[in-house]
Length: 282
Ligand code: AMP
Ligand code: FE
Ligand code: FE
Ligand code: ZN
Image (cartoon, rainbow, N blue to C red):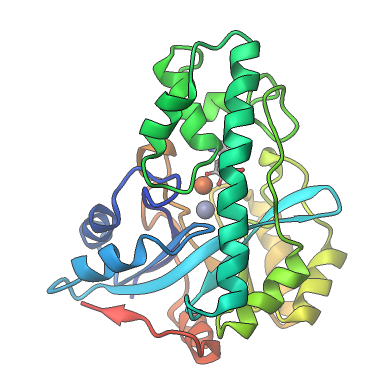
């Protein structure tokens, strides 16, 4: 069993459509893939429809933008009821604020001399939950930077960078409770991704565990070996599951689908905690 529990489609900042993501998962030899777009479930129906005849299992999910003590962090949520009103309202709030903030980031980029505009970013983002990676793609199109990753520096879009603007992000304890109340399973995404910016302390992770966190995403491209070892130990200490996943974004990141995977026993343990939705097999 090859299980990748974190992937993005163009419903947020990935470049594959949900149907293309399903095809890519089959091509990568995966048995299970989770669709975890930022703050949205909009890609689920298309992904589910594309499963037919593939034998692939889709785990419907999302990745919620959170903020604690000045640190931005991401919470993966699996198998929640997408119609549960409180969690749906929070996703809506974050998505709406992404538009306000993206326009301000574009304004900042223009003030800093980058020849991009909002129409271009709107075209790149399409119907997707708009974010910095779309603006990064606009900067690449404009020849300001060579790659999406090169736009995530202090000069442009990195956390606290010259053109960075904050968006509404949920308090993570609240987020963990919202996910659980919607029958979902919350897993802290890339908790040690220190290259992206500040990360939260082990004490905050312990508080989240207390609030109902189910797991830590340990095996991830943004974690070096000592970080993985530390997180694996912390997960064991706190009684949390340890997952692994690619965080695939199509051509916006270099990581391949299935490059990191989750142990089947860990996947089964996640499923056992979910009451909001079931995986869908084609
Ligand atoms: P946002 O959701 O708009 O705040 O943007 C955050 C997203 O930017 C993350 O989910 C990643 O997809 C992407 N990102 C962050 N850091 C980098 C990086 N160094 N290179 C490429 N993409 C990045
Ligand atoms: Fe992303
Ligand atoms: Fe993330
Ligand atoms: Zn992600």
